[in-house]
Every structure is written in structure tokens, then in C-alpha cells.
Length: 128
Image 1 (tube, rainbow, N blue to C red):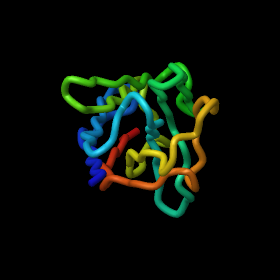
Image 2: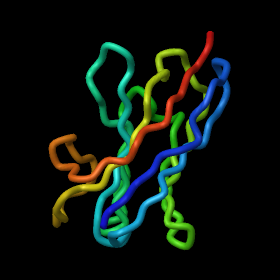
Image 3: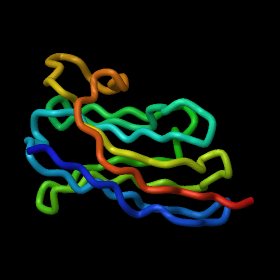
Image 4: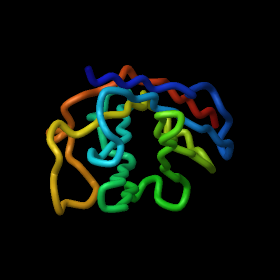
């Protein structure tokens, strides 16, 4: 059974940092691409970052590029999203997800429609 659970959110001042964690089980990190998405109040869910150990690809949305870093810890079965220089517009519920089928020869990113399993999100609030 595939399970994902995001954690690490909280209240932080603008310019601060947070490290978000996605605890995952039930699938191989070596095969499936994993993504971080976020949904701000009144807005659609958007892709933030993606990582695929299968082809070594990573992806960052323009809105977080240069401020975010995604990584996999196989031993702890977690996917970490380090967010720096946080801005009020980063305020959102952040969720991790894994693709429903392995998209061979397709580097990150992944659209929302490709993600088959979602974890409960974690709220990030950035105050100005």
C-alpha cells in the first residue's frame, strides 16, 4: 500500500527557511518520480518540485527556483524539500505525491494528473 505523509510546515518570517519532509512507503524510490505541490488559499494546486531517481532529473517551478532544493533519503524513506528565502507568496498547503505509473524516458516534472497517490499536506505560513 502506497502511503505518503508530509510534515515540517509551520509559521516562519519572510526570509526564513523551512525543511519539508515527505515520509513515503509502498513503492520504490528508484523507479517512481515524486513531486511536491502546493495550494494557496483560493488558488489551484501547482507543482513546486519533482525528483526522479530513475533518471536523476529534478525540477523546480520558476517561483521557487534558486530557493528550493529537493532530495531523497533512501535510508529514511523520505523526500526532503528545503525552502530558503521564503516569501509571503509561498504560503500554502504543501503536499507530496508519487506518479501512478512509471513514465519511462520522461524526466521531471510531472503534471498533477500523473500523480496517483497523495499524502496529507503540511501548512506553510510566511509572515511579512
